[in-house]
Image (tube, rainbow, N blue to C red; front, side, top):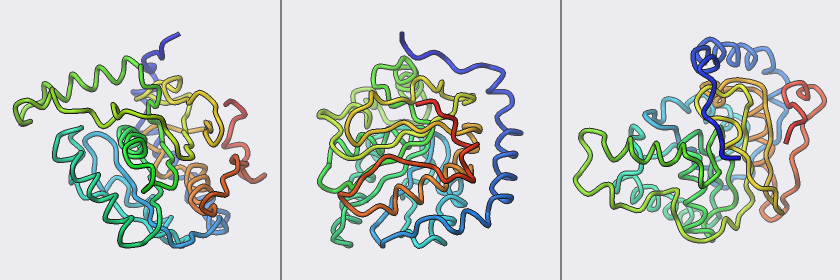
Length: 252
């Protein structure tokens, strides 16, 4: 069955529910500061459509406090898969890889998760692993075709953008560890679009919360610290701590 559209009711309540996610972060902060520390390898965080680095400031700040070497992207507002964005993302990834001498972890929120996934397809030797947040990772999802048409028809884009390769249309398999985080109450992307077919070093983790709150959801931040803090090549499935287990439903 193809992935469905998100519920209008969940969409309308996204902003207040995102506020509840932020309140939960403040309440669980004493636990969050005990999360796994970073090992110094570079982490690149990619924002969603029509957002930019300001939208991921809190996420990057928390991970930075936990010792993770986090960078934002360099594309300003994410206006979709323009030639400029595709080129800059690939150059940024390679620069981080070369300057550190270590593979890069990619974290992508919503459309940013599609960038992360397809950057990993294009340059698996430069990518250590990816975590997507509310991203429609099912490649045949109708949602992707809809976004593609929106991008093509948007004002201000250069002529011929419709012929450019989409960053979610790279050839090749996904050969790095991948975690897809989703919530069944997502009002922007239907959760069924966010689930990988389970394979080795690939997992789906359900959290409670909203789409707009995924970048400051305490369960998501704990998971990110855990996934990013694993040693290179030592991937194991995610297991939430007992205190945060209510935030992680058992669905997979």
